[in-house]
Length: 177
Image (cartoon, rainbow, N blue to C red; front, side):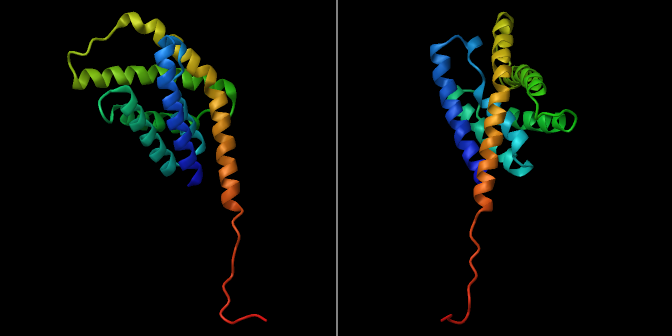
């Protein structure tokens, strides 16, 4: 439980950092830290805690990005299911599969966001000229995936070790001399 709470906090800090980087750098050079935090949460947290964390991270992204409320949260849940399904087929503890899946997930994320925007706002302009920037951002995001997943694993192991070291106190009914 503590690992999920701490990872939610770390993910929210990543969302804030991403918002600051987007203001200073070209979009193609800014990794999608919200997506990486949700990807790592899907790998290291259990189903229930992971689902709650990705929903919270999606809502945090919705608040910062100005998109439709719930759009990122819905897409993060779909991506969570995708990552859990892929994790059953590939060994996502290794760097190369993490990079590959993160790249595919980043492209899928942008496609789903544009598709949802088209569903709810039919006049949404799809900018095909931005495909190069999308692929650049997906590459930058994919390169950082092993680092973020490693940090999430270390953080989750540390939190579970802290929870495992709780003292056991036995209450006695009679006073001991």
